[in-house]
Length: 115
Length: 114
Image 1 (cartoon, each protein chain N blue to C red):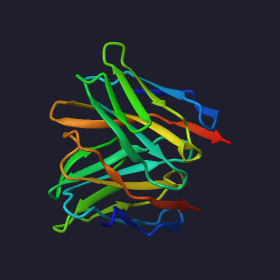
Image 2: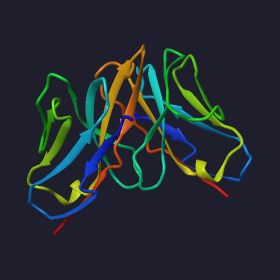
Image 3: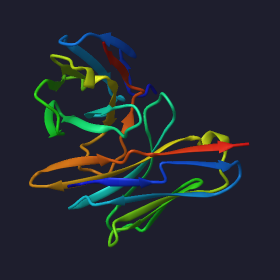
């Protein structure tokens, strides 16, 4: 079975641009979460979606937004990119919400570099 | 402020030896604690999930312990292998007022050498 897939794997943007990152969860998983991991740090929670509704939000500015589609895939959008947005963006899926005790399955991330 | 502190920051051990990684948290109200293994350039992989009532949980050569009273957890790796070289991340979930948050530690970078 395919794991969590993210695209693109690498991306280079300049300040002020907009970016869209994509995630396909494991088949049958209804929950998708997004994380930002700056080099040398642990991941930071951005959003969780379950059944196409936002179920959790971390401490990120409104420039960050996301949505989940009827097939449970998800997009993370970041507007007005800043140099500090350079990071590995991870997507994780699970059968239920994070409020359950089910493990999350992570993709290998999108490496975003801002010039 | 909800925080997760891990120690040591990095660790080098010989193949076949045991090691213990530490995680202290100030997250409240606590819901569960997770340990993940993250290989370089890859996404994290879940090792264990422990709730408030669980003291110990094992996954092969990995054993996690939790003391909810002192807000401490440890991950013990037995008979280390070269493939154990990775970052190990402690994650604490808390929930309250109808929402939840996951707080990640910065990880312990483990290097296993021949």
